[in-house]
Image (cartoon, rainbow, N blue to C red):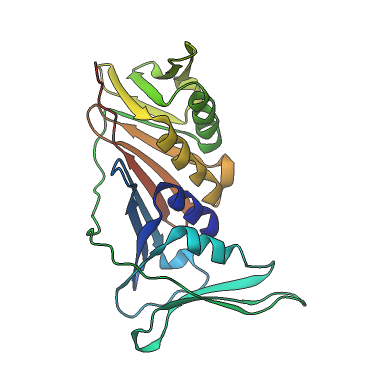
Length: 250
């Protein structure tokens, strides 16, 4: 689950900050264009074993961390820990069946100037919960026909559409009230546009959830504000993606 989660984060940004505290870990980063913010909370109970006496930050490469975790063999334990006397961080793979080997890796460290942000829950114009697998499938198909996805929300559901200008082809999909677990909307219809790639990348988080593709995703749209997309990862852990809308050039 950790490897799949970090793969999603690495697709958004190469570098990220992991802040460890006695209560758990916070992972936060933004894409290079500063359009998508990733905010992941992993409480201590989410890990098999967790120990942190004083808060500390690990600023490292997500893609390299994913490669290290990819070296784990079946049955091996993964340990990420700070070395003594402030000599950096290491990842250790150990245990497993006969023929597996203990492997140790040094994590690269980077200076990241951005401060971690406290992101509050906010009221939205439209809130709905639906199957994470169905949400991902819709986004995959829409992304085939255009780089931008137009979202139109009303009391009868949410319509998502895209258009490929060069071939003059397009696609639209209505997420109706019968297609969601819950749906709340304001009286007025709203229209927003987002980059299809960022919505599509965030949807891969379903594979990091303890429920997998059958889990749910909570989606919050507000006109003029970033989309707020939240996944439950089990044990109170959450992954949120705040994706800024595109500005209409017309």
